[in-house]
Length: 93
Image (cartoon, rainbow, N blue to C red; front, side):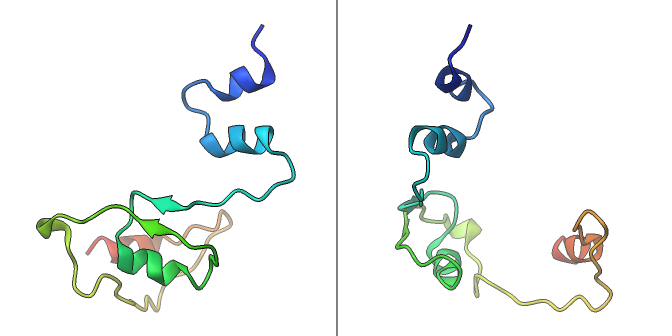
Protein backbone atom coordinates (compact mmCIF):
# COMPACT_ATOMS: atom_id res chain seq x y z
CA UNK A 1 0.00 0.00 0.00
CA UNK A 2 1.29 3.47 -0.92
CA UNK A 3 1.36 6.16 1.77
CA UNK A 4 -0.52 9.42 1.21
CA UNK A 5 2.69 11.21 0.27
CA UNK A 6 3.79 8.34 -1.95
CA UNK A 7 0.58 8.52 -3.95
CA UNK A 8 1.15 12.25 -4.46
CA UNK A 9 4.60 11.55 -5.94
CA UNK A 10 3.29 9.36 -8.74
CA UNK A 11 3.54 10.66 -12.32
CA UNK A 12 0.66 12.86 -13.34
CA UNK A 13 0.01 14.36 -9.91
CA UNK A 14 0.55 18.13 -9.56
CA UNK A 15 3.59 19.19 -7.54
CA UNK A 16 1.41 21.73 -5.72
CA UNK A 17 -0.74 18.91 -4.29
CA UNK A 18 2.37 17.36 -2.72
CA UNK A 19 3.51 20.73 -1.38
CA UNK A 20 0.09 21.39 0.15
CA UNK A 21 0.14 17.98 1.83
CA UNK A 22 3.68 18.55 3.18
CA UNK A 23 2.98 22.12 4.36
CA UNK A 24 -0.72 22.26 5.27
CA UNK A 25 -2.13 25.69 6.01
CA UNK A 26 0.83 27.52 4.47
CA UNK A 27 0.76 29.69 1.38
CA UNK A 28 2.90 28.29 -1.42
CA UNK A 29 4.09 30.72 -4.08
CA UNK A 30 6.36 30.66 -7.10
CA UNK A 31 9.75 32.37 -6.94
CA UNK A 32 10.99 31.56 -10.43
CA UNK A 33 9.01 31.15 -13.61
CA UNK A 34 10.36 29.02 -16.45
CA UNK A 35 7.52 29.20 -19.01
CA UNK A 36 6.67 32.88 -19.56
CA UNK A 37 8.86 35.75 -20.64
CA UNK A 38 9.45 38.83 -18.49
CA UNK A 39 6.81 41.21 -19.98
CA UNK A 40 4.04 38.67 -19.39
CA UNK A 41 5.19 37.99 -15.82
CA UNK A 42 5.34 41.76 -15.21
CA UNK A 43 1.71 41.99 -16.36
CA UNK A 44 0.81 39.29 -13.79
CA UNK A 45 2.14 41.39 -10.88
CA UNK A 46 -1.24 43.14 -10.69
CA UNK A 47 -2.72 39.78 -9.60
CA UNK A 48 0.27 38.22 -7.82
CA UNK A 49 2.10 40.39 -5.32
CA UNK A 50 5.07 38.10 -4.57
CA UNK A 51 8.29 38.62 -6.53
CA UNK A 52 8.71 36.21 -9.45
CA UNK A 53 12.00 35.95 -11.33
CA UNK A 54 11.55 35.18 -15.04
CA UNK A 55 14.13 32.58 -16.00
CA UNK A 56 13.19 31.88 -19.61
CA UNK A 57 14.77 33.93 -22.37
CA UNK A 58 12.76 33.75 -25.60
CA UNK A 59 14.44 32.78 -28.86
CA UNK A 60 14.39 35.47 -31.55
CA UNK A 61 11.68 33.53 -33.42
CA UNK A 62 9.46 33.56 -30.31
CA UNK A 63 9.65 37.27 -29.54
CA UNK A 64 6.50 39.35 -29.94
CA UNK A 65 6.44 43.10 -29.94
CA UNK A 66 4.47 44.15 -28.03
CA UNK A 67 4.35 40.92 -25.95
CA UNK A 68 0.70 41.48 -24.93
CA UNK A 69 -2.00 42.62 -27.29
CA UNK A 70 -5.54 43.47 -26.15
CA UNK A 71 -8.23 42.18 -28.49
CA UNK A 72 -11.90 42.93 -27.88
CA UNK A 73 -14.13 40.08 -29.06
CA UNK A 74 -17.56 41.69 -29.25
CA UNK A 75 -19.48 38.45 -29.84
CA UNK A 76 -17.64 36.43 -27.17
CA UNK A 77 -19.76 34.83 -24.43
CA UNK A 78 -18.97 32.29 -21.71
CA UNK A 79 -21.01 29.10 -21.70
CA UNK A 80 -22.15 27.15 -18.60
CA UNK A 81 -18.68 25.61 -18.28
CA UNK A 82 -17.04 29.08 -18.28
CA UNK A 83 -15.60 28.56 -21.79
CA UNK A 84 -15.52 31.31 -24.39
CA UNK A 85 -15.11 29.65 -27.78
CA UNK A 86 -15.36 32.90 -29.77
CA UNK A 87 -12.46 34.34 -27.76
CA UNK A 88 -10.40 31.18 -28.24
CA UNK A 89 -11.02 31.23 -31.99
CA UNK A 90 -10.09 34.93 -32.23
CA UNK A 91 -6.78 34.24 -30.46
CA UNK A 92 -5.88 31.63 -33.10
CA UNK A 93 -6.02 34.18 -35.95
